Image 1 (cartoon, helix red, strand yellow):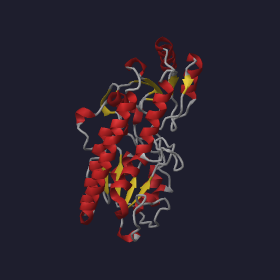
Image 2 (spheres, one colour):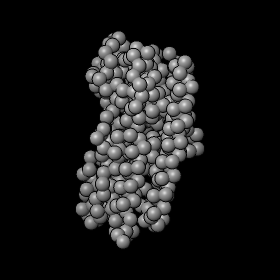
Image 3 (cartoon, one colour):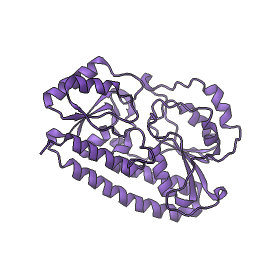
Image 4 (cartoon, helix red, strand yellow):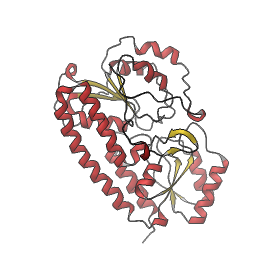
Length: 328
């Protein structure tokens, strides 16, 4: 198999690969353990095909897995490595994950150092499997820098729906290369999904337009929403940095409290995949409302409206606008 996208280079000190226990896990990745994972599924509403004929796909995050299922339809089995509420910045694969990794023929990961502790694993898997960073085809000029970290970019690309359309194209091309016999099906499903994403982007812009520009200030647990802010006109402040490896500092908390008081910001937002202690401290000290939890680095559970990428984005924008909009 070929490596379609280079594995990301070593990260800065904040997000360096720290794989305690990798030496124990790595041999398991190539032990030939079969077993089809229990959470494997094709896209909802598609006819079932024999498992042996379907392309076995592993996606690191729920957002990637959702797009992979929609584009692949009945021709793929997709496993999401990280479930609802899981923080990909801190995720370290366990011995249980080896069956999922071994069973996959195609591995889709975000890249841009989102999966900070999995770099060596991707490098090892690339010897026997097709490994694709779904962010690889996004034009460099559209990527946001990672603070003052030279050469690094913000990995939270899914919060700009137009950027996520590039990801759908990349997944489609990966499928076609690995399974050319179903190329027309993959292209057709991707085209329909792209139309849905165009409508989603328009919905976000319309909802953002319900707030005056000075009301569009989004304060969250960590710096996950800068693509969202750039796309839909919000000033974004994260209490923690882009990665969640470090705790929020006292200065970041104090600065956020001062900003809230100065700008009379109505609400601030915790996130489902980040510990809430820092954002709760800011709310307490500033007397701002603690808004609904936003879905940042993971989708919601299967019983929630945010169980899909489209549902996640709609839920977030609706909760943000409702909480920030002044009372009638």
